[in-house]
Image (cartoon, rainbow, N blue to C red; front, side, top):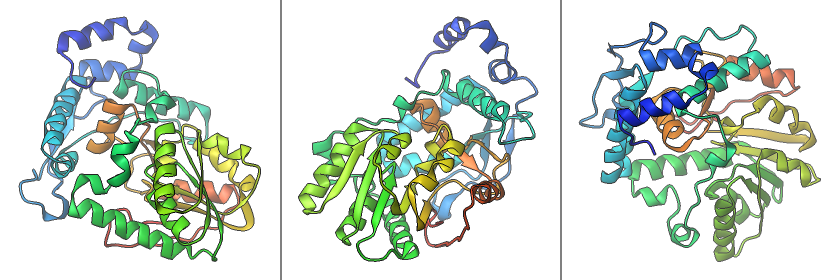
Length: 335
């Protein structure tokens, strides 16, 4: 659905309601108005010294250029997962959004989702977060192993090891993982003897984790549902864990507000490998780097990012004391 012709895109544009087409962001994307930066930046994008990666980042100015890059990524993905990831840092989009000053306001949130609509071409739908994996095919070689990439597998395993070491859970702890995905952390904790409950929005992912647990002869309580379904479990946990999943929440403030009902009084709330960085241009919002644009445009995933100072302030507002641990050997090593 990302490979479309320009006439098709023009037709789709005309079908949009006038109140959507008239918004500042949509006009900028359609007409390449001054609200968008164009041209080439000299910032380096070569990851880890990989040969052949362009050293200049292309700034995308409109949806035609974005879909051109999507087509390039489609071709790269046919070569290998490594080739796809090699192309992610070669482009980005920059928008001047005139965001409201208060990042906790509903007006700010509405503007963020207006931008998502502009990039995706439709409103955010949580159903797009589902991947509908082939369970039987994925049991033997789930992500990251299916990539056959030494770098990707190594980065992921180091990140999981750092996370487990940092959490330092007591033996037999009750753990809730929200957005468990492929279940790699879930199963590692279960094999350690922890009592693990896992929730994922995708029923096929939930079934995959169940089957992987069955083959490993470990017990995991797996549920299919969104983040809000955790409140139906009716218990509190020694640790509640997000691994590259919190940034898919369409109501991250409401989700944080609910954590006191899920974490025991002496428990831990853990965020691992989340896009939290003061290099982001706004307190929070959708990310416009190449990989995030790929996931938004191609799959409809919500790819939020958070400035660290905003994230820390927000956790403080909800009464959390924060500790930060970093493993520099993997890009996913921040807990």
